[in-house]
Length: 408
Image (cartoon, rainbow, N blue to C red):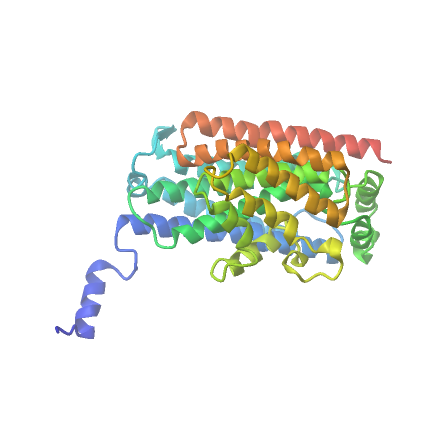
């Protein structure tokens, strides 16, 4: 047996570089994970801090500490992404990927998708600043800038998925399956947050409790928002919640299924079951705001305990199409979700019945988005951005303005 001295090991490190990423593929992958980490810190940790800040402090200036933190860290992520996207070495690692021309620069389509989503978020931040400055705080999560930012975040996670898949075409990446599970979890959390929007409150009582906090009770603009929620019964017992949630869940799990037959199961069970991905997925789900801590069994009130309705579709969606046709699987998933959600929060029979076909619609939408992630092209990227950062936020923004005007 030949022993290698520490001197020889150090000499080898000096020749090959101190970084463990000793080849171009690993460098590109690690750089991508660094961008993902920065982005998650900005959106996850920054978003959680922002929500806590507004519960403790009167809104006086858009540039609050959490807002500054979010934009500074996101800017760092943008710089890191720019260095990655403009790297000829990294682009060459996207074997077989389409090429998108950006001002004369040839960029691999997965990088182009991710870069476009980052640019959309920066644009959404400017819109959010202008919106708060001129229209105030009495806006629901469906306001145009909030919906725009939420869906741009969704597209960003689609972009990260596309980049991982692109780099993995030529070589197995270390931990790529855990990364994909993580991305599916945050996609599900983001989709639920954006699509259900103002209907996320567990009950009418939680609305009253949230908006009677001392700091919030002093702000007439926020109190108008509470009246909007209460006058329109914007909580999970509203018949609109189950179909909206079915649409969001279907789209996220339909996307996950394009990555593998068992991915929907993993994406929904990981937050509560998986020992390796569970901790990160659970923290992700809480920080992104889709699932409160009560999702993980920490609530005493049955209305605040939510795992069963969200777990059922993921389990059913993993059934092999050789056993049950995939369309019937999605319809059954929607009906089962509607029945479970109705049993906990209450809803109408029509709402439960609508959840089946609506989840099928969401799943087919998610499959189309998954196809974009697996094989992005300039045309597909443009269509995805127009729909997610144009048409859908505009419809949500119109609904938000109607609620604001109709509620004194």
